[in-house]
Image (cartoon, rainbow, N blue to C red; front, side):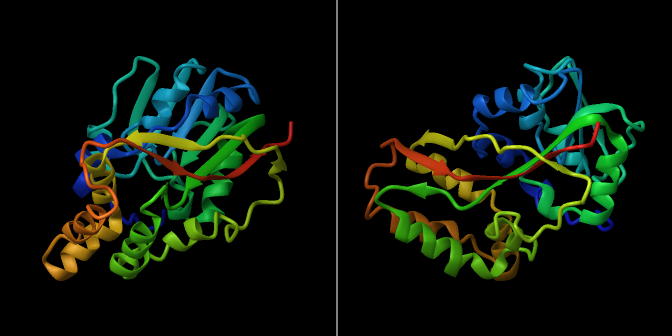
Length: 250
């Protein structure tokens, strides 16, 4: 990022507590596609992706431009955290078998970023970026869509458009050789308060509070009570994944 836009440091502890967890099957499929020695996770946030990679890779370097996010990151003996930019990772040339970017690619300067990916990946190395869009909850989707688009919608940063486009608007480099996408979906079984906790971490909700001096979440909580009466009732929450995935030529 030529200019770091910090949308997450303010709520770093909430981000670590409420964000959904990526399915282990995702990392199993990724690990099967490349050598399992050295991996780099870019835009690591609280280290969720990096920790999952540690089950398959010997050494993981995890970077994020937010010092506060790195301070909140989960500790693992195979993971080394550093504060660094996506476009200037500080890694050696051809030093990584895998580079990942989980729900982060839309924040980067893509031309500079992909040049850095090419520099750092070993020949034949794998690049995987994924994102997830708006979640789905049976029986309450209309209310959630209204909050997402109408209440906090005007407060999403411009980069959110790439999420809405499922990364189809991001120009991929010519050198990136196509690889089949993993066939996975993210799910969580949450009660109403857990869902609200997750929604409270949205950057658009934080911007709404800055501009209006009040929290938009009570509006959603009140509306949800009509279709989700008991705050302790557990429901399945689903997020669709989308990918940019490919290999550096061997």
